[in-house]
Image 1 (cartoon, rainbow over the protein chains, first blue to last red):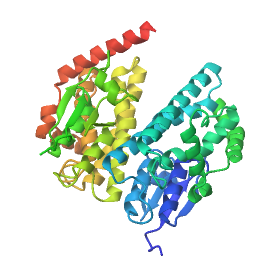
Image 2: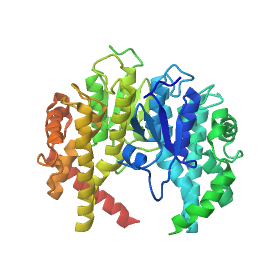
Image 3: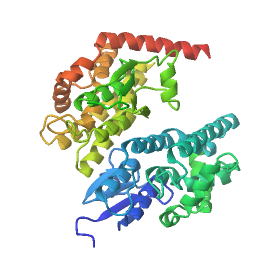
Image 4: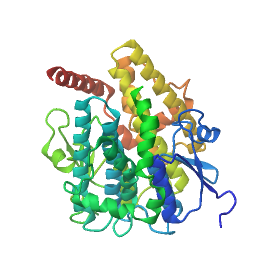
Length: 231
Length: 235
């Protein structure tokens, strides 16, 4: 099916929520690809360094021998190249697209950094602050879901879309952070809409296949990240 | 031309390169809009708090009564709503779009912050580090320009496009940084392609009209730093 030179490769790591976004997007479009698990700490591969010399990070999509970097950019690229194949990832209405992009940026720039901080910091005061910021973000997202997405099952409407993917790709990490810190983040008492959305999102086939198991993420934190962050 | 209810308003601040981006795009598309200067630093204005409650920043584009925030999101919105009118802002090829978005993100996340850091630096060491980072960025952008423009006058080709607007809007601040810190960043001996591009971009009518005078930006910066220092010492 794939024409030679049209091969798709994905450089990623199993735990990276950013790589997961790309996997889900490719899955939605039914695009076959070769997945190449990367080493990020020592010995970054030649291919990674060559394909993403600026940031040396994952994910990198390589299509027709050209690299595309940054998960949000890759997801939009996939949506544009395979437009008309499978469901649209971004909404068609310009205003709805702007809203989806706005919240995706908010999640990346504000919400997830505050949330991951919960398990990164040792100081109790800093931790409490991080938790508060994470909850504040979830409040905004709950409200946004209610206002903009009008009772549909997903942020994208009837099917998962750009913002579902942007937010939902963090679910493996959210569950792990909840387990490690013993705090319920997407608490259905506080965020009923988000809690139900998370369940629905988690049961989509492509998502189930790509979100890592919570225990595996917790183990990765305990064995690798904890020591790294405490250094 | 605009139907009723199709009014376009821009919540703005004259020194902001992010605001200039929106203005350039609206001008390129020939869209009339109402420009509303906002109070951003001391007492944020009502409109700002109402239309951008999450970030409380400019620019905010208000179209058909609905706000759109974040300058790069606004650029894409303008390109999509007024598609087919005037030049395209983003390239049509998906790979070229990805490249334009990548470098625009790099300018915003890395190059511009490290450049303004030159003015904020408290020690010579900090300043030198910021200068080095900024120059490294310019090296990358010089290369990117060569690849993207393919010998044409702009990153976008024959006409200005997304990356020209994002990067170009920062040029007035590059001049301000030079005046305040004495460091010439886009030096034509180091970055000949970018220096030539910068001249071409700055010569565009709408850009010339929008660009604040360097002296005014220097004054603005000094006032802003005074406010910031007052806030920190007041805590």
